[in-house]
Image 1 (spheres, one colour):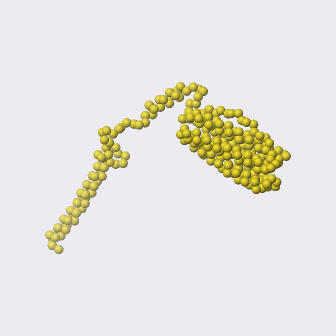
Image 2: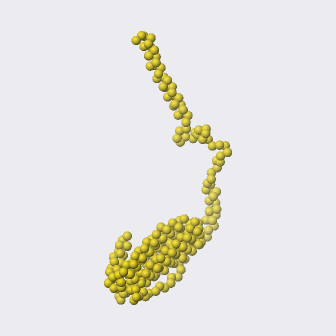
Length: 258
């Protein structure tokens, strides 16, 4: 190889890296000109136009003035924290409280009857008492909800329930359980009507409370009691009722533990 050729190769080897470095520097300059994450610098095509609105949509100190006036002028006899709670919803809750307590009252009358020595159905008696407590707990849920939303709880008069449930044609057990099924279905219907009132006034929290805390458990109760009625119709009025009573007695401790 001649000296001239060798010299030409040497020059190419020396100059080649300089071309790559120039391209790399240009690329770095372009990246530096771009806005970095978190930077306030915006590309020209992202800059808001002069006519775009720059005002805030939410002005809390201005919007809260009306609420402040209502709170400051509210008398001591009224709720300070009432939250968009319609009067019809409040009245409906008070009516449902009365329904739950009335059904609890009937269950307690059934408990007292089944616990008599001449009836001798301790399993029925324990199960009826447990159901009475459950209905009273539902009434307490409604009372708590009423107070939370700023309503006024008004307890109505309870009607005196029947105290005699003997039935020679069907047998005491079947007759009492059919009565219970009728009560549970009626209660579900009343809760559905109350849910309609909540939807009528677009009260989402009220509707959600009814669905989760009352309607779902109520539908399960209807299914449970309907099965008991079917079973009692199969077993007759003698030994089968005695065995069914023992089965109910075993369910009550399990329900209390759950």
